[in-house]
Length: 263
Image (cartoon, rainbow, N blue to C red; front, side, top):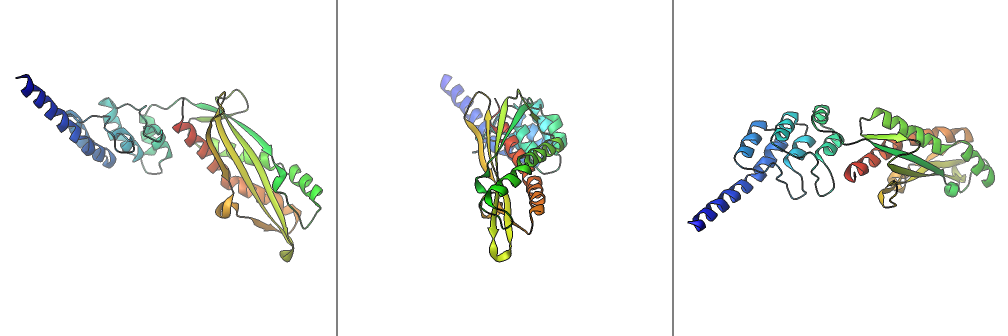
C-alpha cells in the first residue's frame, strides 16, 4: 500500500513539474486565466527556465500587468533572481515594451541606492594640436572642464529616469568613479584637430573594492567617433555633444549593475 501511495505522489509531483514550461509560456504571453489554472493544477509559481527566469519575470519583462498581479496573488516571489541577477522589477525597468509603467507600479520597488559620483580628468590622450603647443593644449582643455560636462549629462539622465538610483555628493551606498580622458590629435593634412572623449567607469559598493561594473565608454572604432575641429572654439561643443550622447548610456549601465548586484 505504501508503495502505491508513493508512486501516486511521485506521479502527481512529476505531472505538476511538467506544467512548469506551460506556465512560463502563459506568463510570457500574458495569458492570465491560463496561468492561474496551471498554478491551481499544481504548477509551481517559482518554475524557471534554463536562465533561471520565473513566470513573474516573464510577465513583468513583457509588460503583462494583469498576469503579474495574478502571479503575485498566487505567491510568486518578486525578490527571486535569474542566473544573471535580474529580478522581475529590474527586467521590467529595462524593458522598452508597452505596459512597463503599470508593471512597475504593481511590483514592490527595491530600496533606492544612493550613488556618489567621483570624477578625475586624465589628460594622457591630448597628443597634439594644430593650433597650440602641447602645454597650452592641456591647459586649454582642462579649463573646459569636460569632467563637469559628463557629470551634468549623468545628472540630467538621472532626473529623466524613474530608476531606484539617486545621485548624491556624499554618504552614498555605492560609488561611480569616472576617469574622463579628452582626446586630441593634430591632422596636418586637414589643418584641424580630431577631438573626442573617453570615460573609464568603475562602480563599487562603498566598503567593497570589487567592481560591479568596469567599462570604457567612447573607445574603439564605433565608440570613438572623433570629430574634426577647425579652431579651438569648437572643442567645447564636441565635448558637450559627446557628454549628452554618452551620459545616459553611462547612467543606465550603472543602474543595471546595481539592480543585478543589489545587497
